[in-house]
Structures are given as structure tokens and as C-alpha cells.
Figure (tube, rainbow, N blue to C red):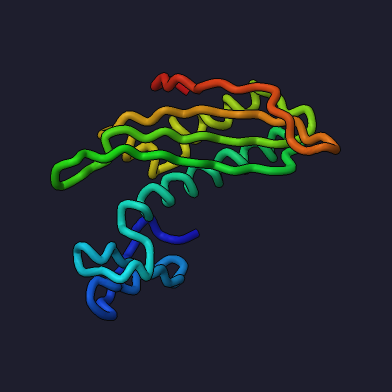
Length: 163
């Protein structure tokens, strides 16, 4: 198991284009911005990557828990929408996360519990961001049918600090 520390670096390539890497995985991610502020749109904007990180963190938790609960998930997608302040530092002011779960007889209680465990216990990105920005958690459950996914349930997990 790796230590509970993390190192990362961003290296300027040109204009506002950076190469980002972290010590755990050593993968590289391009960072850039829009031309209006000197970029070439050759990579993620940092705040986009923050939202993607949040979604990836909770998605890995939720799918892992659903699998442990022996849910027959045939498709899974997590979408996010973040609203930002119009003044600098243009922080997130509200985030909505949507969990789209497709499968065979997926149990709504299992989905809700998986979302809850991610929100309250397991996802460090969500645990950190939820302290400073409201996060709305919605879910959509689809039955996998021969003619394509059919929406059978939708709802919202209302956060409580007990789990």
C-alpha cells in the first residue's frame, strides 16, 4: 500500500500549456486554457480536472460497492455539473452529480447506499469539496432491455452526516 502522501508537478511547455504528473501513477495530463487568457485549448482547464477528479473518485466507489452488493450492472456513467462564481477566484458555488446505473433488476436501495457510502465515508474528493460547496446527488436507474435502457427509477440522495 502506498503512503498517504502525494506529490505532483506541472511543467510549462509553452504559452499556458502545461504537462501535469503525480507521484502515484506517473501518468501525464495536459493542462491549458482558452485563448482569451493566453491558452491554446490543448488540455484540461484546472477546474474541469477538479470536477473530473470528483466524478472519478465517487464513480470508482459506487461501482465497487454495487459489485460487492452483487448488482448486475451492465452500464454505468457519472455526470457532473458545476456552477461557478462570476468573480475571481471563480470557485464552484454548486455541484450536481448524476449517477446513471443500467442493469438487470438493480436494487434502488443498493444504489442509494452505494452513493451514501461514497459521499460520507469513502470519496476524499467529495469529502473535501462538500465542506465548502453544496453537492446535490441524483441517481437514475435503467433496466437493460433488448431494445435499450429503460428508465425505471430516479431519485436524490439527501446527505446526512451519519452513515
